[in-house]
Image (cartoon, rainbow, N blue to C red; front, side, top):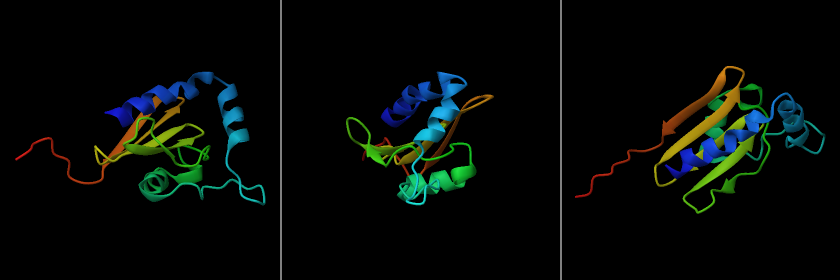
Length: 118
């Protein structure tokens, strides 16, 4: 549950009020021509981002390169309205974002996970 805990902890960004969208749009990653870019989003995180609408979707523009989750075990990328985390141990990708109507969470189990050992 480390990945989900990290997402919930990071969602404070959505609590910044009216200044949050303006601040986030200023920090968005851009290409050399100055256009918004999503080229930093790769792998399973990109798959989830595209499924949620990409640059025009709920998460908005990309704020960071993909990074390791503190403590290991996963990768994450920050977006204007939330975050996507991939947890290797749980074999799942989790997206969480804020919107006018609250916090939204969307997850995908990427492979069969079992806590049973034989």
